Length: 251
Length: 319
Image (cartoon, rainbow over the protein chains, first blue to last red):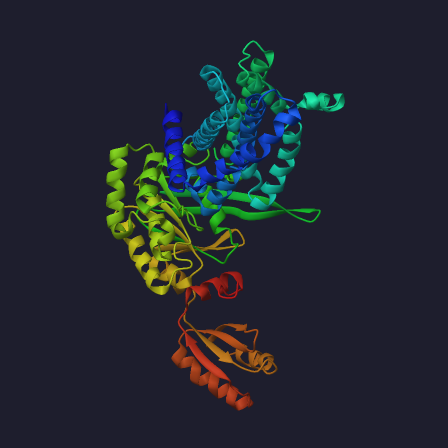
């Protein structure tokens, strides 16, 4: 009860600050839209897809997962600014739930990611992408879990390193191989065997496969449940670890 | 209201490959009574902030015990948290929020209902003369206004004790005087105020009682008047050439009216005497006889700096 109340308080505050500066919507949507307009047209011939819509069915899910990973991983920067301003310390002397300090922030990130995802999906509909709404909602659940995990981990790391100069290269170093090994831009079915083998160890590659299956309307595909399961477990682990960082040094 | 015994904290710091343990606070005993303004005076790095952060539950002590407003610091930190307010040194407001938003949020983090939080915020804005800018973003405030918001944030839940870490550092003289009035007002409202400062005049003018801290230890404790009285008499500072200083020291040390004598690094002597008016003519006569050239002569009533100097052998102004 107290946890829910405190989380809501933090969420409200963070969401309010985000809405006050709506540039983020533009920034968050601009890049994916550029991919949609300037990169996706290459895919139909490259993937040998029968129609442009079929190419979008492969590309848009990957793009959304990419957005969820990156959107989450870079949230830590905001927290470092808050640390510096003394806002975190000010919360720490109150009896507020330490878990709520994390969850309120991460849920804000999840909501902002999902709103970006909705905008991009709607734009893709204009390019003849067609997805069944129920499957789309499951895909959004996958995105929400990814964003929850990456933003929580980013906050946890930010609390540990306490400096933008350390956080930026760290996050980039993690994000790059994760991106390349997840088949986001091109499906890994084109990859040589050894690369596919390595990618099997990347949880995000499972998430991308699952999201693609959902966009394809193939609910019976094992990728869907495996992807959701793996990401859910990792999201819980990420939240637990990051919550510990918030509670550390404060009893 | 606050009672600590043997409070300790050390940090490990690493320079290159060497790991060093720094004893930031080495056994602090304090007794602070309800309703007083208690000051922690000391140079930067003396361990004031570390002690304050321990008392505010922000860092865990390595040893010692403390009771704060009836709650045990080690066994019941949550209880301590509810009873205290803490205003950090480096600020605590967010640029993009307004004072009112910050105050309402802070009150709600203490579990206060929304309507009550709004009522309290309005009252605090009034009391701290912030109503005019209440809904502007914090980044538009002056240093003094921002500091007042921060203090209002620290007491929004009506704590019994409020800890203020260097409350006037970086403020202009006028804002500083204003802040002193605000702090005195907190005491009138029945709060116990615990401040840290490295300003001698602040400790002297504002605090009912002070503890002087150096190298992680309390070296003196009492009311400013008591502490100054311990240094009996007055201080005559004689400016001399570095070369002639030892000779003068040897000569004046044996004089009956000089109770204590110290050499000043840049040449000259500090003479602790019972009464300056009696001592000065005699000092002048002795120096004149010996043919030593005098550069300056000053008479000081003892200040807290003299207290610091006698306890630590250094001047607070230099450290």
